[in-house]
Amino acid sequence: MNYKTQFPDFDDQMPEFVGFVDTSWHNDVCPSFQLDLGDGQGLRVWVDYADKTRRECPESKRFALDLMQEDEFVKTLIQTDNVEVLNWAINDFKTGETR
View (cartoon, rainbow, N blue to C red):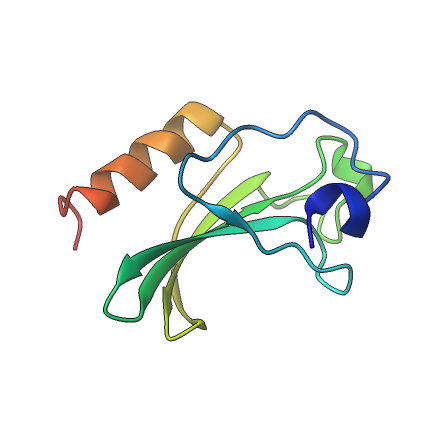
């Protein structure tokens, strides 16, 4: 699976998420990528459409970062429209700053 085949009409260039695996699935609302942190814990990034009118919830932020445990959702860590803020949150969590 990858976002290009699961979401062929995706409307923007995908940011690179180093170490993340593309977990996009066409029945989700947007592409996703997951990083295994070990001990069953992981991070999942959701990347919604750039065009807000194409989003399931147009008022939602473009990027979301979820904490996962054994591939199950635990909580959303951050929602933002800024990919730099998203990458900061990913790095912050990976280094243990927010665990």
